[in-house]
Image 1: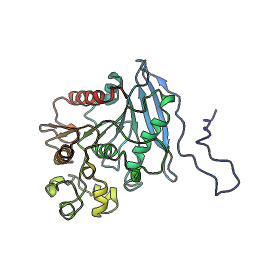
Image 2: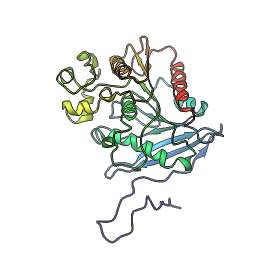
Image 3: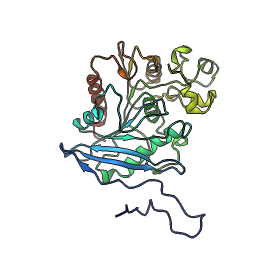
Image 4: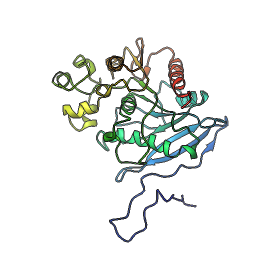
Length: 323
């Protein structure tokens, strides 16, 4: 049988095109139980922005756990490629997801619009819509809506940091997917994400900036094309500032764990260092773990599973408290 839309999702029956509305999201699909008892929901359409592909998530919930906390995983890929189903090649398949489940934490891995599809802040709007969706359907999905965290890598780390730092900013919520619930999170893990998209000239000339400008070319992504320009559609200083997590650091930020390889030639470790400094100077809780000699995606790190374990422990310690 075709999927039955709920009243809230279904287009309103009307002969007038002025009152007809497209569905903004779909109700959760039925899960499949894994051999270990965990449930997996595959291809939940959490947002359906008009003119774009449906944005989907994979959701895993741990076995025999009532109302667990949930972490939203945001994939990397320079904002223009990547897939919610695939982790970096330095991580075993589903390694992040299984580690969270073993700690009693649910995990949702999400799509977002890529930079050839839509310019920033569409990607941030999408990530926030995923969090609102999880809160909206928390009862049906057996999740605790008050205990949600976020974890991302590379471009996904950048988006995870923005999600964590802009939870109270209505102007950045967007209008896709479920509306109403808030998109704030209780904790953030940022693996080698970009934190300052401004050029050195932008930071020097920005009188409203609360962040210290970083060293010029040391913050530039080490790729042969302009991924920041692709994301923003230009190198406009105000657009770059609006997309820079470091400009949103306040004492109200949730706890952060920043992890970065010192040998990263794609996203220099200075990005995590300046975000850590901005957070601590603002009075927020931030931990910085530099992985000696590791390149991007922790290539060359001697024990990537240990880095996953540390990240999961940090998330669980801040989510497994009473709401």
